[in-house]
Image 1 (cartoon, rainbow, N blue to C red):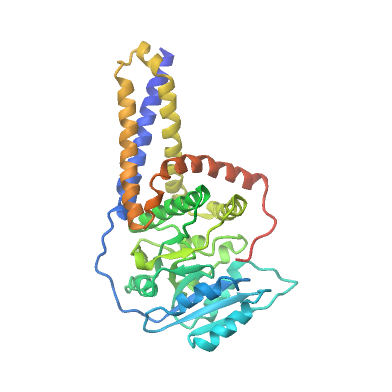
Image 2: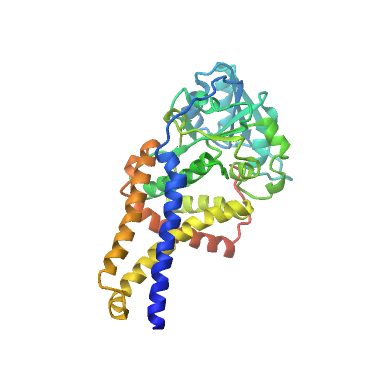
Length: 384
């Protein structure tokens, strides 16, 4: 009898995980999968695009012209040269001769004071002349010359933040698909949560907010000591249901250089995970339930299959194994449909077949990375 009770508990917890996952798929993620553009404000206020660059002489010649050639009434591009030791200053001087709306701010090396990217971002914000600030990276390019318009068109009188999508470049190999699926999955969450009125983060490769909002919340004061967070922690602090919008039109996307080896990607993810503990408690709960439900779904499914012979003898009718398989298949089909439609919207169609294996891999990867961060705390941070 105790064994039968245990089996019943497994079955009903399995059903609960499916209900939780369906809630995320059909309440949150469906907003991206079935997104339709609504009436958009198109007053196009003056804007400042801010880019922080450290040793980017190999990226700026390719990507900066696309930023400087946006079809927009009035804007400037502010590039913060963060103590570059390569030819970045020379590259930027040549661009300044050609583009009058380019403003370069140079930060000089100070051997007594070491700073992270947040300092460079603050320098760029203070140096920008306009209220509306669009952020991207030096190794990042807009897909279209309408990028700035598509991001800025979302500003109504109450809007202060616009979240955009930033893809990674498509390259051969499994690692590339894994990184791109991880990026898609994260974007699916923060964009759909924002559309549902619960914004919690953005990415600095494609993000707009008002300068006055930055100073209202005292910039990065509460988390300046943390390496990452110039984007997600600030948005977590400042975003509300009223002041935040998400833009997912294809012309609004940016594309970034992608890590080409496991070591580089793992190091990048380790940095990103340092911000998690600083999120609002409500966001940590909302975000934490989802991967826990994913993990328990798979664990309980295999446990139930393992106990199937005992289920027959313990009182379950024999056809209950088909109920388990049917529930498993139903959840999987709903997920695949939502993911497929969302991938179509975000132009990541080739990730569809990768999604199932990538989900299982990441369910083990993130806990392992979290434990690694706890055991081996980082002593230094990267500047950019």
